[in-house]
Length: 312
Image: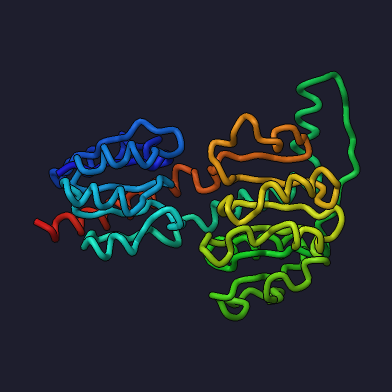
């Protein structure tokens, strides 16, 4: 049997996983992809394979219908987020599918904390100035002690990040209607979005994307934010209305942003965000450490192998 792999982090270590699959008479086929394949490309490719390890590709009903007409027997979404995958279509088409939850909480939390510190102390901007011109900048930063963080998402990533922020002396207000209580983390305050948003020094997004929270940070909410607040997003681009954020950055309502994810990835060359030196950009890479990729990839393979062997 053959498995198509379209997840870039797993593809980076694919040579490690090919012999593991071969031991079970399964061939892993790496796709040629930078971030995602298009729906048209997937409709052409997926039917040729028995299994599919999905990245952030548009895993739509049309793709699964094409796969069902071909060889596709099962799929696994690599990683946590599943907003790009039509699980309902899979259920209706009788295609077994799952994801690999709780794999990257610590890793993504590390990146989010780096962004928080980087924004507060202008570390990335100092680095740029020194590299690009003969200068020795000394901008006054912000102390983290007692600053308020609105943490949007209190699942695995959010809880790991909360511990790190509290260790820095920050006050954390967590928003997540699907998680109750403080999860045994002392010092957490809970609120319903967007309560207290006007008091937050940082807004940090770590939640999954769904139909209810699309553009949850929009023009209306941004107007309520504390002047000079910072925004960090290590979750999904669709949580933030980028056009509204751009206007807030231009006006100074939001002082700066650290964005590891975007509405469109890679970030288009024409995006006005590229003209904003106060922003830090990532490449949707928060979970990508060798340890985490190895852990999630082996989990994805185990689950998919189980599905495929059950179909024999």
